[in-house]
Length: 308
Ligand code: DIR
Ligand code: MN
Ligand code: MN
Ligand code: MN
Image (cartoon, rainbow, N blue to C red; front, side, top):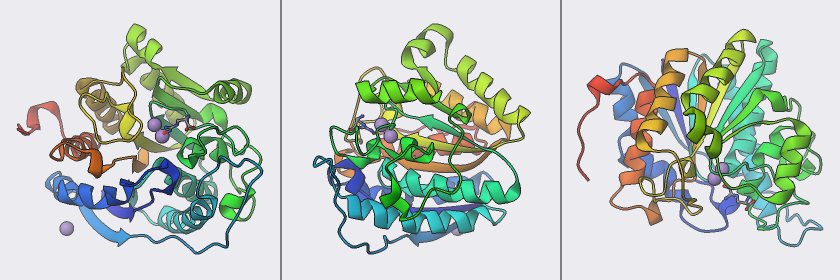
């Protein structure tokens, strides 16, 4: 495949510093080289910059960095919409998860032009389904999925209406184990697909994923994967500001990537919430790169041994 890497050093959505170093950590961990070793061609476009937006305010005083959020969303949206018109596989190297408001909204424009429905697999400890009215933390990385599903009150993000909201039934949140009370209400009301850790414990991670992939295939959909580092258990992935116990294991995460590869359905990817400032000798960055390698065709029998 022709893979394009875009660095998005956004950290304002996370409410703490450090995610701005994510793109360089992926480069240092050898993302481009690992993908090339699998036979793909890779072009690194470097880092995106946010647009300048005049200061914005909101009735919810808890909200942080709304103008930075708007500036990033607009810049990323345009970049993603352009990439969606090319026959390339874009990887958005974040940066916090708020960047998905831009990447997925842009990709949705490309999908609509191609006449294909866009499906989204959201791999995360959290649902990221707060609105500007419901967020208690004020950290806007807790909002992108609600924005992308067309919920109200987000006009400031793009400075215009969202052109192609996701169909909530075409979204699957996998691995979730921390949901705020208002988010729970909104998820149920809008019919978003949610497979929480309880379901994974009972049925295994393959069952809900297989069901979702079958749906994508039946609808001839494009599939975007949005991978939050906190999808993984903190014991194997400490470099994230919002660790939640009880996350996916090393093999569960690789199995997801291997099944996604075998499906042939994935057309774009976000790598988000890596905070290299919190990492332990680069192990989380390396694990994320290895997961991407599995998504792009590395198999169990070819996996190199590593020591940390
Ligand atoms: C919480 C946590 N739901 C919030 N969300 C996080 O702040 O809205 N998302 N950490 O990644
Ligand atoms: Mn190269
Ligand atoms: Mn997230
Ligand atoms: Mn999360």
